[in-house]
Structures are given as C-alpha cells and as structure tokens.
Image (cartoon, rainbow, N blue to C red; front, side, top):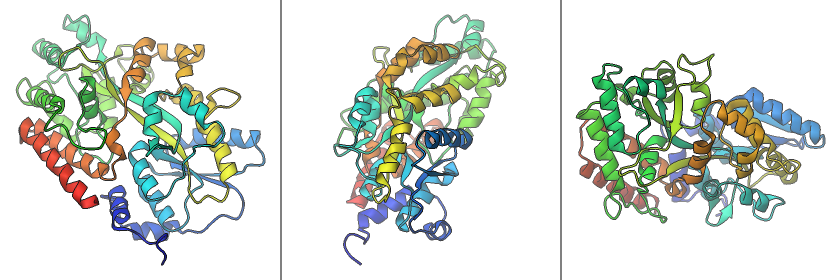
Length: 443
C-alpha cells in the first residue's frame, strides 16, 4: 500500500468523528459497493430533503444540457454522512454532492473533494454571495463549494401572545426576554413561554451559537483555540442566563431536554410557546394557514443580546462540491454551476428553492428581486430577514477536524446547565478541557 492510499492516524480519527454514533462503517461499505461508472453520467448525491423537487430541477438541467446525463441519488438524511464517507473510502463515491459546512474541513483533509479555484464562474459566485457563506466554503484559503442554501438564527415570537400580556415589541436583551416571559407566565397565558431544542442530537444546536454570536462574542478564536474560559466571557454569561431562565424564573420549558426540531415546530404552530430561537425559513411554515393555527402571528426579530448593544447571529451553509477523483469533471462542474451558480446571469436554483420551500438564499442580489421580496413579505419582515443575513457569521471552529466531537460535548454541557447539574464557570472550564483533549487526540 502506497503512502497516497494508506490511512494516517489523523485520517482514521476524522472518519471516526464523521461517523460517530452510527452503525459500523464496514457494513455500509458492503452495502454501497464501489467502482466507477463507465456510462459517462454525472453521479450526483444528496440528502433526501424534497428529493422530488431536486429530481425535477435536475431533469430541467438535463433538458438544457442533453450531453450531460445525471444520475441523482437521494440518501436518507440521518445516514448521509456515513454512507458518503463509506463510498469514498471504498473507492467509489459521487462526482458531485451535497456537503454540510460541518463536514467540509474533514472531507477536505480526507481528500474526498477538490478545490474549485480557477474554474469558470467561481470568482463571480463568491463575489455575489454573503461573506459568511464564502467563508464557510473556504478551507486553508481554497474554495470547495458552490452554495445550495443558507440560513441564520433569529428570535421567533408570537405577536398575539405578547399582545395578550400587554407587550408591544419583542425583547432586545436577554433580561427583557426573561421579563416578558415572566409577564406572560404571571398572566396565566403560558406556563413556560420559551421553547428550545435541547435534546442531544447528531446535528448542531444552532440556537446556542446564535445566543453567543448575538452578543458579539465567540467560544473560539480564528485558530480554533477556546476563549470561553478566558478572554471572552460571553458564553459563560449566556449559560448563566440560560440556567436562571430554566431553573429560577422557570420560563424555559423543562421539556426542551427531550425536544427535537419537528415537535418544536408543531408546538410553535399550536401556540404552546411564545418564543423560540430558530431559522428564518421556519416562518414560512409557521405562518401557513393550512399548517398553523396561529398563522400570521409569528414574527422574526434579532436574537436578544446580553446588553442590547450588539446585533449578530450565526449562519449555516449547505453547498455543492466536486469529488477529487471524478472522471467526469467538466460535466460535473456544469451541474454544479447550474445548481450553485448563475444561469443566464441569475442564481436560478437558489431562487427556485426559495420559491418552492422558503430556503434562505446565499446570493445578495436576490434581496432586490421583486418576486423574492414579495415572497418574504408573506411570512416575515423583509428588512429584518435581510439584516439577519448581513449580520450573520459562520462557526470558524467547524473547520477543525474535532468539531463534531466537541459539539457533542457542548450539547451535554448545555443540558447540564438547563438541569442545574453544573455551574456556568464549571461548564466553560469543562468545555475548554474537552478541546484540549480533542486537540491532543487529533495531533
């Protein structure tokens, strides 16, 4: 076995992190098989979100480009990372694929993907998207993706419930959020006005990062070193507020420890909570009269900060990428350009996803598109919607190979805070120690 095909200890650890808490990789390798495709078709893989809409859009691409056949394979979302890693490890893998910003750095280090720098139109795409999305798709100065969609965390509140409690505007500080929630509670409207998704899960808990970024702080510096137990007290102060709101004023529902996104969405639409922190696109569903009993009452606002002086939030980026070992690079990149770039000068697919499902668009030009703006106005305030995108920044730490394991530890720590099982000081010390241990593990 040559050095190029052998696994280093670091690469083995990366694969372990990417497939943590999932079935054995060997069984998936057997199921996935391997080998190339001699048909010349572009093998395109993605998680199974709205796969019928993906197929319809791919069919349109093939009609416009009859010389570029595409074989689209949707993979169950919960198994997407594991199966994709298994295919690449087995010597196969897609030519073009979806990539989470959470997975990008690990997949680059594992040599699954190739940079897109120098390919036609890439510079124009990166010039036309929000800086947070451009940063999220860049590793070690190289660009690896074209954007699929983006979103940012925001405060979501029920205007009708606030009005019942005599509240005329959403909170700007975390203390105000607690006070307004207490007012709703004291009025007998809701016992627990705040709902969050705090059950342990494989995906990241975006609202935690949103709370820290809203106050202008961070948990890491640009090099991936923890600052939450040292130079930046923001995370400790946010955790202290969470603990107080959960265990002293008790305005956060204890049931959030078992709550996942879909049940939270259902609870917001059923008026069981007045506040949550979530993605902007949720408002389209929340304010759909066919799906929500409180349609029209759910609004977005900036996430309250510790002192009301900062405006910020966290973004997520999902992207299309190109396999390092594809044998149909030109065709695969044509597909990538259609999906994540410009078609006839317009970001066709980004607009398609917004119009079909309300997904956040990464292209700044769509802020001026009359159809898009009219669409946003049906479920959210367009000015706040765009302002959140401008204020957003990605998690720099996702570019560390140990990030997924750190996220697991952070979720456990947040649960302990909500359960009153640890103090904010001990929590940030524990998280910093976890980072030190992970860095040694991956060194």
